[in-house]
Length: 251
Length: 251
Image (cartoon, rainbow over all chains, first blue to last red; front, side, top):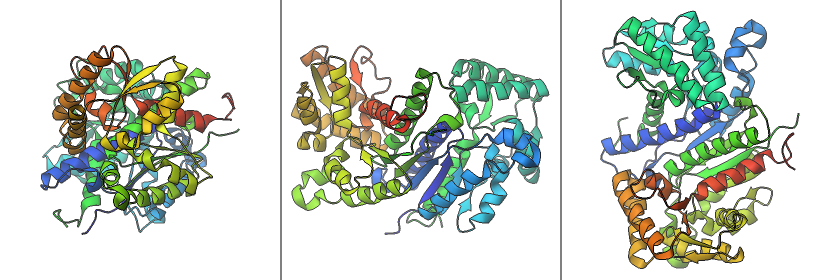
């Protein structure tokens, strides 16, 4: 019997988001198994490895121009190499900002498919006929135009928050989720989400930093928003790669 | 600066429990950092690796006497060896029943400390002055007396469910959580938990299978029970091992 392929998750950025990504991946695998009429049980899941390694701050490195931009790269390259050595055929990076280094990571390990979160999200939105989306993200992600580029390629308008809203997002990410203060995170994130919805109408709101869904969970007033979690899209994409070619699954 | 040590998590049994164990471990690390007045941030967490590998059913193997008992061992040994090669100084196994093979796993990799969930739980209960506990677990765990032995060594009486209750637990574990039917899991688990509480009074109820806490979450009527999640105790123990000897932490 052809088994699903081994896949990897490059995490630690932050560790809570990495842990949550594994949960999303396991859920996505179970959904995929059910959709193909397969029995869901321990042995039906693909082998997968999660690397949670300390990586210098991504937004900080992108801010300090050339001098700092290599800092997060080394530990990510090392962890990716080890995930490749463990047999991973595809790897997802559980951090949006880290995708600023996606090109280098992919080029260094051509034998592994390194998924790209913004391209997966853009393809997902385009497939649903979405033409515009607002982006909640880190300064680093805005700076490198990660989603703006991928969305433009897919014909989707990308609406960005204002400067003071960006500062609120960074506060919610760093002083909120990363520091374990979920109340602060919730108030920062929900404020910005509601302002974006008010300004741009019923567009999709992309929670383009893995810490944002963790902090926005159950925030009052956000029930009606079209919030999209890129980690969920990326986890589904990774599950699809793991089962590609397995019996009962599409090639 | 002395960094925390790399640790590993041996999971996949089942994968949802493995994912949840990483969440518990990250939470435990954050609590430990805070308790020692350290700043919680991405780079303060220990490097950790999660191996989610397909392992043949543990209870099934223990049932079929000698002939089947080696089946889960090989993939666990292989994954543990890889976690050791990745630099793990301590490893937690995110499956109670799998601890039936703890002795062999530990003997084969003496350079790694393989934590023992039942011993950690017994020490935790004894430290709180608990003298009796009821055990919800798999047939495999009952068969090898995993908790009975560890609790006896710690001077704690171990109350076991009746045959029909054990069957309900197995149903909730296999047809419930492992198959993704959380409603079924909830009704099986809560029924047994309430019966144990009625029969043995206000004793601790040990949820001695990683699938049980996942299925018992938010079950009606269980709010007043003294439910103990061994995964939480084990995750805290692993976090303590990771920070042992790090600056600001006990040696």
